[in-house]
Image (cartoon, rainbow, N blue to C red; front, side, top):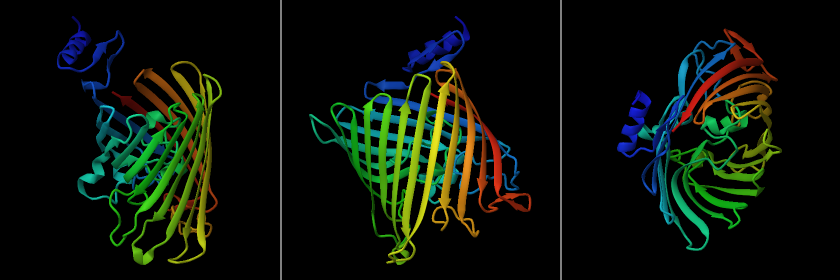
Length: 367
């Protein structure tokens, strides 16, 4: 018996679903019992920013893969998921630069909670659930889990809208699986805990239509105040995207975010921001894929991204991506990306410049 076979036999003996292959050992998600699954994810990366930031931290509007010139962990988590058809629960604990950047405002151990929620099915005949806790965001087509995205780094609209949320939601999936609708009560805009002095809840919706396996259309929203009540400013935000798989090889994603926030408490005037994005992916074969992205982000009044410049944050970006699936659950990725802003919002040494070019490579393993 060789080493791989010995490991596989041991994992099987202790209850892990594993098997040895000639060129890899693959560990599948662990079934502790028919209703409980243990899984995990690790994504390491190296990014080189040609502006060479002194702090080794990339510009503040990047919340994933934001460390310069170092081998770093973007996201690693271990997850337990329970579902017996009537009740369900998820608990995932994480570490990485994603957690440090995105959960900086959260207290204590909450910074390391990727997901913690529980739900109960409301109907014996329909797929209707109520869930409460900490969730991945209902907004957008990109998530913190890089392997599920077509590009190594997240788009500007994804990095600057919620990755996670906390609260409660009721959801319904149609018998055909074509329609999904959800209503949410939230603690705020990417919040586990509400800010001190904020006594208002926020709300959201999600509506997804999948007429077939190749088309997904989605509408998601957020409505609420994310500031103390003394500075209350209502925020209205909508995300719309479509994902189209035209063939086994070619796919396209188009997305558009738009938001409006009151300029002052009680004001009838609003600051507006918006962001369109297009991503095209072509699969060269079963193991390799390439993708290109074009995007723009306009936040002249600096609601989301603060620059302190005359025109605020108005930035155009484009990128090229290459993926290679080493094994079914292991992918190596490479991306070149460039951003160009109307104002000189980036630093290159002591000089303010209006462009930023960087490369990122990542290795993602799921188990």
